[in-house]
Image (cartoon, rainbow, N blue to C red; front, top):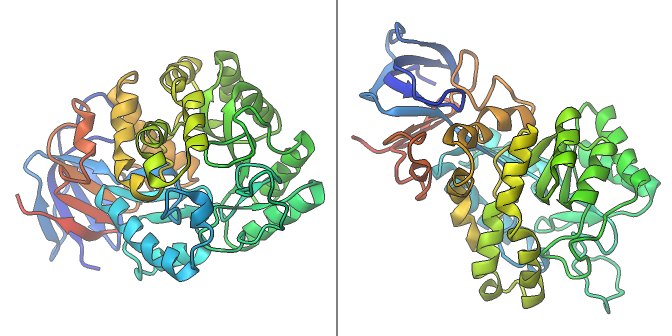
Length: 410
């Protein structure tokens, strides 16, 4: 891989309220080697002069489902693996073209997909996977209706986001199996959900003993548990059981947010998905009953951001979109920007997200030894977060691992 030198870059990385002065960035062997106003191009390096444009770390989305190629998760789980894989390749490439160079998949993607990206067979974001999410019977990954007493049939399909397990021995085995299969962390469904038919939002998923068992298995493997959570009771219980990554958190109170912050947890709000489910869900086949659940959590979403911000609970960027709604992935920036400073919103998709991915110093930053995951933005996103939307329209250059994947001449 040839060396590269990026000149006259004004860096925005979520650590400061304004872009830096002009910097030079040296890239060799897919990594950043030097960042300095005095940096010079190595001999034979390709030089790209940004002329004062903004350079950002590649964006990180900490809540995606790259196998959710249909809006209806029940239908998605029945699709042939070959069709899901083919559609997922396109979906991943589109994410990369929006500037997301790393995504954390919280249910569905497998190790083969992560390796396909790593070896360059698939051109997409780096994949940090949980494997299949764990759900109790009647939980957020059980798409059988109340009159369906047939055994679960599709949990091993690529299009299934999760698997069912009940009781401490079963959840331990499921966690171990997902870790053995390449999961970098373990995802559980610890609350009711929108897209599943028999679990109202207030339902608590799994017993305390089951959650604690999964946390122990994850800790034994040197990793952590992520949990699907909406209600304050569910969030508090998960934190008390040792869950580290708190997905959604729409109905959190400030007291619980402070407890979570004190325990070192990280929240991953996903407000864009509720807006789009409300607007597009029924037309995409999700069903009126599921769409009817959306307002239970959507209307509290903005308040949850200010609650967690006041409590000092770190928030990583998440989108949680399904099927055709993936095109709205970047709109979470603008939604959060209505109540949060732009610097904080950008931090959620850079260094905070990198910490949650356990890749601090490797992604989400522009620093020596980090992966050369970089995007150029026409304009200052600290002044206008909408520059990060539009399917990458304002990103003339995208680099992943030192390789240029998009370059529109200016």
